[in-house]
Amino acid sequence: MIPTIKIGLTYTGFEEKHNNYVQWLKAGENIEIITLSAEEANLQIVKDLDGIVLSGGVDVQPRYYNSDVIDYTNAPASFHEKRDVFEKAVFEISLQNNIPLLAVCRGLQLVNCLLGGTLVQDIGAANPIHKVENKADKAHGINITAGTLLNEIMGVERTITNSAHHQAINKLGDGLLINCQADDGITEGIEWADKKGKAFFLGIQWHPERMYKFNLSDAPSAKNIRDRFIDEVKKTIKKIT
Image 1 (cartoon, one colour):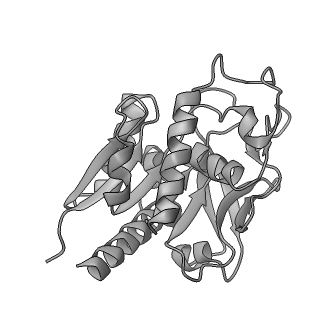
Image 2 (cartoon, helix red, strand yellow):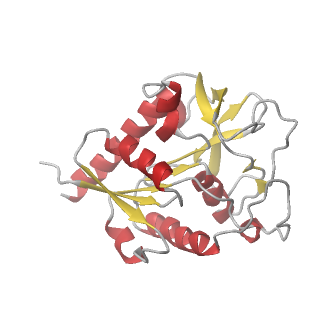
Image 3 (cartoon, one colour):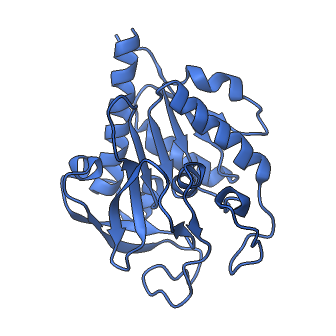
C-alpha cells in the first residue's frame, strides 16, 4: 500500500489561485498538499516531500537574471524578494534530494534564472497571441517538439493552452531543453536536456490548474501533465518503501 503522497506547493500569494492548484493536484486522490512559503518558514520540511510544485505569481526580482532594470513595462509595484530567496532554496533542495518537480509559469521562469538563464522582461503589447487585454486567461496553440518528455506526456505535437504571462524565457538556462513554443516563438515549456540520473522535472508557462475555466480539464496540457507528475511521485515513493 502506497502511503499518503505529500506534495509541497509554493504559495502564489492569492488564496483562490492557490486553491486551484490544490484541487487540480488532488483530483480526488489521497494526496496531502503542503503550502510552502517564506511566511510559513517551513524550508526544513522540503527534503522530506514526495513532490514539489513551484507555482505562478509576481515577477522574479531582475537581479536573478543579472538585470538592474526594475521599471520595465508591466513591472509589479513591488517584488517579493523573500519569496525568491525561499523558492531558490526549495529548488536547490529538490535537486539535492532528487524530488520530482513541476514548475508553473513564474516557477518555470525562476528555474531558468537560477540555472543562468535570462528573461524577456515584457513580451510587448503588440504581440497578438500573448497580449493581456484584461485579467482573463487567453487561449492559444503550442507546438511540441517530437521526442521530448513533454511530447511523450502529451501524446501530440500540437495542442491548446492558456496564457497569463507578460514575461518569457530569453536566454535558456544551463542544462535545459525547450520542449514547446507558441506560434509567436515564445518558449512555453522546458525540461532537462540530459535526464540521466535526475528526478522528473517539467516547466510549463501555462496554467493547467485553471484550464477548467475553459472547459479543458481533460486536455492533454492539463490532465496529462498532472497525471504524469503524480505517477512520477508515486514511483519515487515505491523506490523508497
